[in-house]
Length: 333
Image 1 (cartoon, rainbow, N blue to C red):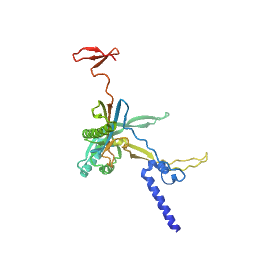
Image 2: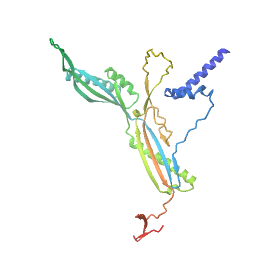
Image 3: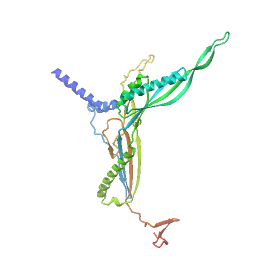
Image 4: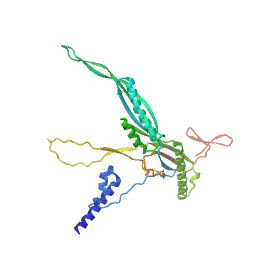
């Protein structure tokens, strides 16, 4: 019987730990508070969530704010590797770096013919060193002299399949090319995406206006309106966040003791913008990091018509009306 109870306790503990992992290590402290026995000695309270206002109005106008996100899978990616070569002569350093880059390009073409490889020269400079000159009865003299050349190039590799990057890194590593500076995400569909976002926002707007017309018992479609819209784009490299995950003991050390800290590992994760403040999301289920395009449309609807006639003008703080014949007559208010 005791063995059965122990098994049940172990299973329950494992279940709680598994649940805590769903939020990831970045929220480890929060997860500890929100899971399991936290509520054992604390009165349970339901969390209140404030809604995000998308529409508001007063006696004079109504403002509707429609926001959308489009998650776009990159049509291609560009990985940039930094390549450094040192040699004793300009010819030697050039031949060595070109040989390394050509071997990478050849193997990549054998792996996938759609991969494009381009090299870009960054710097080509001479290097110097110091030579000691010994003189009797005098201190040493150090003279600077040329020692060779340093050549830096960027190796730009364009590919379409995200998983190809692993193979690309392995091929580059064979030629001692390890420094991957960045990865750019490219799409050729920006114009079409903007059209989709605008069309989707227009559908949402028409539905909102239909509903609000029923609620307010007035035809909002016929009211005077002003429009403001805007676009923005966020690439995956802008959405990565870093954190350090570790648990540290709390100990009161002897003031005279020496404490050597271990360097903690810092990692990064892709943190895309959430849909919580947006009206709609296109392609919400893409797993890999995506290019996120944002659309914002604000419509102001005038609820009360102007009391003055349309053909009214103001001069010196007095109102005048223009008649059909073109005459200007004062308007008595």
